[in-house]
Length: 250
Image (tube, rainbow, N blue to C red; front, side, top):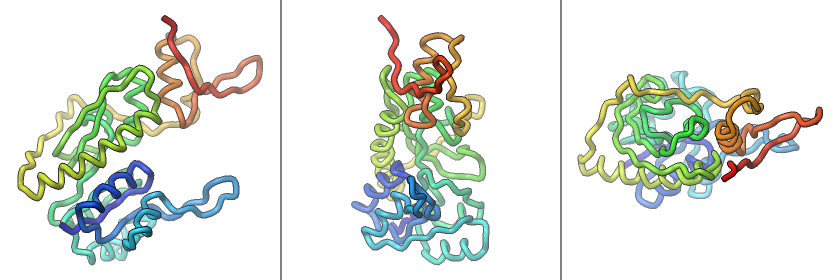
């Protein structure tokens, strides 16, 4: 099966690494190099670096809405596109290109926490469970049919960082299993119930300022959910401070 992979951060690179062990990845889509670090030097994404290590062609369009970018993707004749935290909108023309469409690795149990920050929002809401959903992408925001779901417990001590790391491993395993079932014609798509949908809005630095009028449990969740970004913060005797850890008393 010929795969085009679209992704950018470490979450996506883990899935790409798993696919490379079992499938033919003909090309990789990732976001353009960005200035990073104190020197603001142009830095490649983790997905690009992994693709280059394996000699896989890398495409870095600023948008997929142009005919030129779409022609470049179509030229690879992929059977399926796997998408994980890519960061660009896929127009309908791109969604329709591969034989089996585009499959997305989403870090929540859809339809709960559609959107940009499902890991953090699950912790902030006090959820005790989350997971991975492999979804057939459509034109909506994480609204496509669900192909595979795997759940995991959110431990009381989990931060967004530790939960991200768990789900990164799960996502890689889940997409490999999904493609195995796809090749064997064993997938049974499940529609999402829109009445159960919640939305995981993108995080902002402003929301990470702690509100000390809230309960201790709420504040502890905020500290865990906003770590390592944007990091919970407050002001103590006129001095801004970052709050990296919080634990409820017995």
